View 1 (cartoon, rainbow, N blue to C red):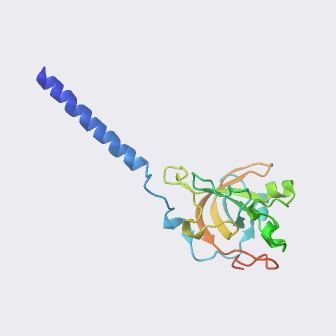
View 2: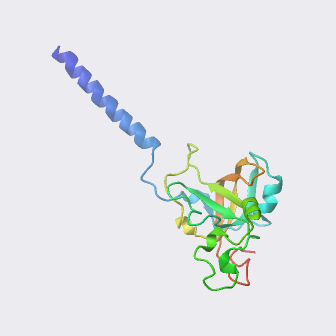
View 3: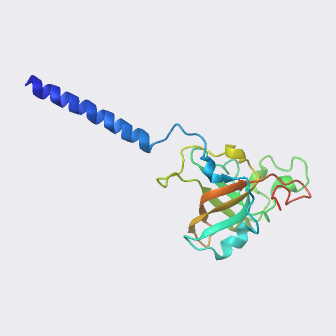
Length: 189
């Protein structure tokens, strides 16, 4: 009886230990920054703006486009997942309108036509090897900031006629910010 009890206790302890190790291996919660492999300092050439790419891209296509981080009021970066909203460069954010303090949250493009805004936005996801978004915001990661230019290279995950356009990023180039009268500054063009 004692031998049976000892054997069951040892098996239970080994089982718990193996389960904890498996859980640690599949849940890398210690990471709070995206792998360097998602980013490049070499700006891709001959890149189209987001709205041009959206016109012809199909689910599963490899896509490359120029955009700016922004499109949602105080939530262009998802707070608990490695996702961000980007906007086409043709959309005018409030800081480019030349009026001081025009808007407290210029990244929401609040003065743009709603239909044009919906057609000019995309969601960019950064996924791990298991196909899951990392459990942290990418705000500030590798220089990503609101209203900066980015070039996204990735795979189109989903799209619809209402403007939905979700891209799983393979690589991102991070540029700078434009300024009033210089809408393409920071785009690397």
